[in-house]
Length: 246
Image 1 (tube, rainbow, N blue to C red):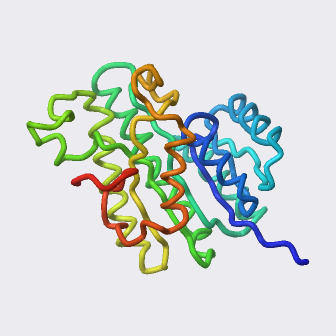
Image 2 (tube, rainbow, N blue to C red; image 1 turned 60 degrees about the vertical axis):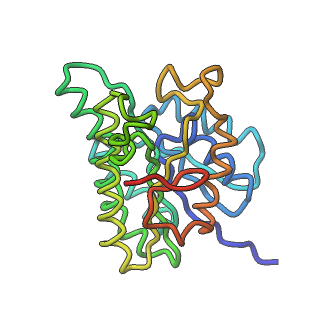
């Protein structure tokens, strides 16, 4: 029996948390080859070793990638083009929640990682996405970026601060909208998805004792986006049980 060609996937920030779990659940299916994107080669190497030790039927390899560094973005394009010639799914998952420095530096870091990075990376990889017969872009966001939730005086997000993170995720919403309009003509599906409060290294608050869901549980919901089960709502700011106001 002829082997089935695997779909090629790149996940940024895949060395831990939600990104790692997305890789794990895709590899369990056996029909994906996953590029484990990681800014830290050391952490990425450990993550890849962990995934490979589980003997999943899918395949994976490390892709050193810092979404704020154009050199690593171009290198990522070259690697994927040389080895596979296309990209089927791009998951823009890498993010920073609590940047350090002055207020200006915090904003610059957050926007560079959470909004500018996904735009530049996706635009660079567009030629590879266009070579797929069913390309998909998934931008992992957060409900804290919803302007509607911020302006709702009855909701939990009304007085929450964390401006750098919130504003950069709002910017990611516009990035997604622009991708939807500009890349939709090529048949590329674009989604904005909030995985919800999940155990991860995003901040010290993302812990189970604080009510965070496990990454495994969170990603099971996100897989509905991967599988196209939520394409009818692709113009929305999706989350695990519904959608947020923009």
